[in-house]
Amino acid sequence: MVGAVLCGHDGRRGFLHHLAVAASHGRRGIGRALVERCLDGLRGYGISKCHLFVYHHNEAGQAFWRGIGWHGRGDLLVMSRNLTDDPNA
Image: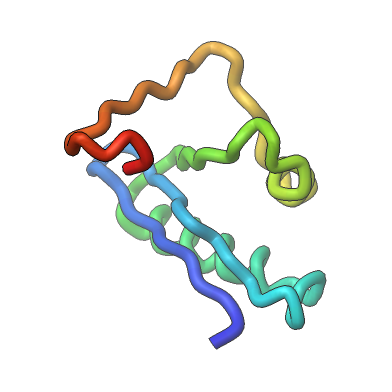
């Protein structure tokens, strides 16, 4: 296996999570192909918009996503809540 992605939807919006491509196979279009396969699948379910999350410090990740046509949104705030006592969860 050289690449993987987790994709799903809530009936209204699609979500991409955890796109990864082995470093040894980077810059060959594998990530882009995985994303396009996901987006095609979402379109098949009538989903017209997809979201993803990228850490602010992940400059390479941001560059990848911008390079294939994604853009940042300044109008949303992601909020999280730990469900255990583990502060690293």
